[in-house]
Length: 187
Ligand SMILES: Nc1ncnc2c1ncn2[C@@H]1O[C@H](COP(=O)(O)OP(=O)(O)O)[C@@H](O)[C@H]1O
Ligand SMILES: [Mg+2]
Image (cartoon, rainbow, N blue to C red; front, side, top):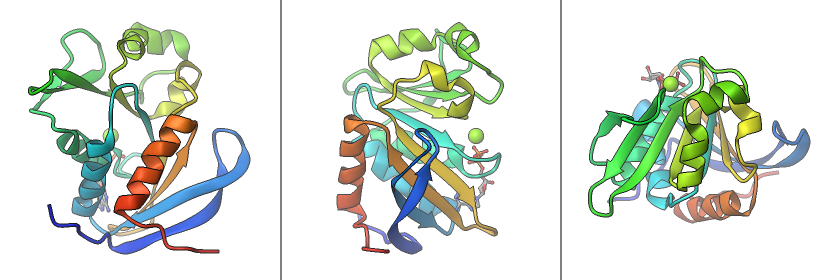
């Protein structure tokens, strides 16, 4: 695949980490169309492996589902299906190795009991890939080592995507993504 440049390239800024409430370095990407967001998602998806957890925060219409669509494609999903086993969770499969990619939307959930009622603990045990929209609603249930992506609508078709790693696994993902889209120095 030809490497396509994202609309505005990439900068690194200091942001307040919503998870720890401490200043930490976020990697910020900006896209200028749904296609660019999907493309960014594809690149992320290609990096995902078992036990990776990606949280997608942002308002309705920010572009979370758009990013997931790209991620599933980049990972190699052979098609989307509602999970036969879990409620509120979409399951993507990859035919060549029979791996799973779970996509959860927690918009209507609140708290751990609700999260567990969907079968989330089984998915975490199964050590497959998990991507969650509205992760704030079930935060206590999620492992700390997660890639956190906060998407902000900047008006028109412009979106800011701020990436923060919650642990060493997520940090590896983020640095590999940085190899694909080099992060420009920015103070
Ligand atoms: N740069 C962009 N990235 C993603 N979506 C965009 C972008 N610009 C416009 N959009 C539009 O914003 C909407 C995003 O919808 P969706 O992905 O379902 O959001 P969410 O899941 O966050 O509610 C879509 O209608 C999409 O066409
Ligand atoms: Mg959505």
